[in-house]
Each structure stands twice: as structure tokens, then as C-alpha cells.
Length: 287
Image (tube, rainbow, N blue to C red; front, side):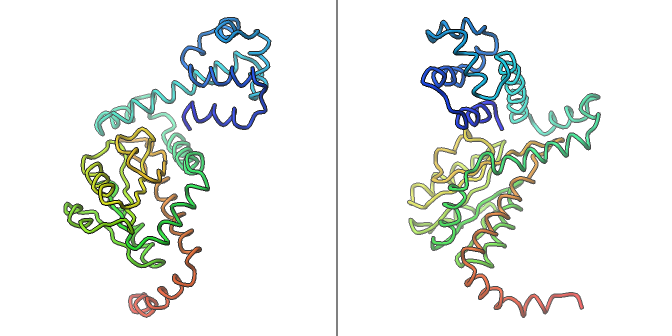
């Protein structure tokens, strides 16, 4: 979770007075500056007392203003490292992972990163958003699942699972994506998977889907992705890895969760389709 999201959750959960809310709002909009301010400076900027600043910190769950500053600095440092990683090439990532410090406890580092990535599924996506995606996938006429290169396998597997639960599912993972989605219309859903480093093809596909009036779901890693504004529903997961490649652990988890929820919503149709497929499953089963 990034610094702003973490602090926003504290503010949302706290009961603040009008003045305390003003202090919290100022901190939220001035992270970098607040890291190096005194309580007096912050108070003077808002026309409130030092005591109000301190009470706000305690209401947000901090023991002191100093503890709040230390957490902000730590979060901002992590965010900066993640941002640097996003714009690093695979070779630069590999060189970083092979440095002396990075190699220490690589197993533990990887485990922690994967747990953080999995946590991002629920920290960055509300239950309401997931429900809206499930409703869309259950009700639209055609579902175009699009991924390319590193995300092609994600799109193929998600489409494979959805085909067993609902009709009209098509995976597009080759170079003829535009031809695949040529007939997309307002009754359809375009589900695109794309992470950093972002692709021009994803931008073209999303733009075309929007121009055709289709409902758009985008699974990506940042709300500031260059094409995030084109999505009707935005799904976010962290893809931080310990080596030169993005991790797909959280994306797989989220897509399997969605497939599970769609199957549950459409249980009768899922059973019917599985009964049709059972003879073919039996035919290929190892005796």
C-alpha cells in the first residue's frame, strides 16, 4: 500500500473534530513537507495550536508527531524505490537483485514481497468494485479478455475458467488483437490486463473499445497508468518482484477470485456447462 492509501485509511477510521480533520487533510496533501516540519510550523500554517496537532496524531493512532513523521518518511522512501523500479529495465532490475545487499536473505525478501502483493488485492480493490466486475462479466453478451506478451498467459487462463461458467468468452493474446475485437459493441465487455512497462497496444485496444461503447475493465498495477482513465472499472494489484520480471502472483489470485465469484453467481449455468464437458474430461483422464 502506498503512503497516501495507508494514511487515508487511518483518517477514514478515526473520529476527528473539525480542526483535527483540517490538520489530517493538510498532512494528506503535503506529505513531503510535513516530514520536516515542527508541530509549531504545521499549526501556524493552519491557524491551530501545537496541542491540536498532537491530538490529531493521537486520534490517528500515533503516539507522537515524531512517530507520524517517521512513518511518512519510511512510506515515502518505499514509494520512491517502487517508482524507480517501475521505470527500470529488466537488466537494471536484474543488476539490483544481484547486488550484495539485495542477495542477503533473498528467500525472505521474495516471501515478503509476495505477501505484500497478495495483500494489495484487498487493499486496493473494494468489495463493491469486485461485485460490479462480477455482475458485468455475468450479464454482458461477449467477454473479450485481452493480454499480450507477459500478460498473455493470464488472459488465456482467465478466459479458460470463465468459459466453464458463462457463454461468449473470447481470449485475444496474439498480434491480431484489433481484428479479434473488431465487432465489439455496447452489449459487450472488454477486459484488458496490462502492467508496467505499459504497451501502446493496450492503449489502442482500450481506446477502440471505448469508441465502440463497450464496458471496459482494466487490470493494472497503478491508478496513474497512462490508460487508466479509459476504464469503467479499474482493478489494481502490486506486481513487485525480486528479480528482473514483474510478479503475477497477485494478478493470478485476483483473476481466480473473480472466476470463483462468477461461477458462484451463475451456479446453474456453470453446472450445466460442466456436465456437457464431463465426457471430454473423462476421455482425457489418465486411467
